[in-house]
Length: 433
Image (cartoon, rainbow, N blue to C red; front, side, top):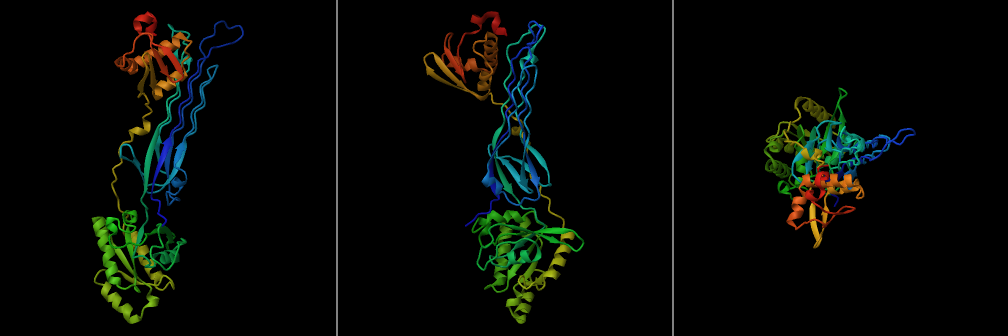
C-alpha cells in the first residue's frame, strides 16, 4: 500500500565561512610590506520558500539532505574570498516545520512565496590585515571561518483547500473531482483507491476559482488511527466547509453518514461542527422512489442536499453553483499555530569540545572550533601558537586538561597539530599575545 507522504525529515547544512589568509605585501621597491591577508567569504544561508504549485512532500523522499556552498578562503594582496550563494528550498504551501532537537514549530507557511531563514551560513574569518595595529604592525595570524549550521527538521503538510470531500471508501469522490476539475485521480471500483489527497481546481462563473481536496475514504475508528485515520483527518481542518459524498448503492447510506460524522467529532470539535453539503451520489443506479426516500431521510441531518451522478454528471452544475456561493459566504478558518523563535537558525557556535587522554603525557582534544583554529595555525610560528594557546585558555580548555593531570611538557593534539604544552610562567610576557 502506497502511503501519502505528508511528513518528511530533512537534514540541512548551511555553508562554512572561508578562512582568513596570512599574507604580506610583496612589491618591488617596497621594503618590508605590511600585512595583506584577505578575509574569507561568508557561507551560504538556507531558506525555505512556500510554493503554491507543490502539493506533496514527495521531493523530500527522493532527496533529504541539503547543503549550501561554503565561502572561499581569503587571498593575498588583501583579496577577500567570494561569498557563497544562498540555497532556497521550495516547500508546499501549508507546510509546518518542526526542529527535531527542540520539538519547536519554527515555521508555518501560509502565504505563497513566504520565505524563512532555516540555517545561517558561517561568517568568513578575518585575514591578518585586520589585526594590524600601531603596536602590532605585522600580525602573523588569521581567523578560521565560522561553521555552518547542521540541523534535522521535520516537515508536515496540511493541505490548504476551500472544500474537503468526505465519504466512505468507493463513495465516488475521485470520480466527482475528476468530473468538476482538471485533476485526474486514480479511479477504480474497490475501497481505498485514493491513498493520496487529490487537489482539484474548479473555475467559477465570475472567473475566480476554488480548490477541492479529495480526502481518502474514512472508516469507523479513523479518529483513533484505524485505516487511514490520522493520516488524513488533519488535512480537513483548514477547509472552509465539507462536501459529504454518499453512495446510495451502499448497504446502509444513513449509517455510513453517521459513522463518518462521528469520527469527525471524535477528532476535534472544530471538525464536528464544520458546515457540510450532502451529495447523494450514484442516482443513476437507484430508482426514483428510493431516491425520494433517501432525500427525506437525509433531511433530518441537513437542509442542503443535492442528488447527483458523478458518472453521468446529473445534478453536478446545480451543486457546483451552490458550492461556489458558499465559498464566497464562508471565510477560511484562521488557526493560530504558535511558531516559536528559531534561535537555532543563527547559532553558529561550535565551541564545545571533548578530551581524551591517550597516554600518560598525551591528550587529544576534539571540537569544531578547535579543529578550525588548528587549520589556520602553523606550529612553526611562535606568534600563532601563542595566540592559539590564549584562545584555548579563554575557552576553558586548559582548566579541563588540568583535571586530567596536564603538566608542562605534555603533548596536546588538536586536529593536525601536535604541540607541547607550557603554562604562562614558562612563556612569560609572550603569553599575553
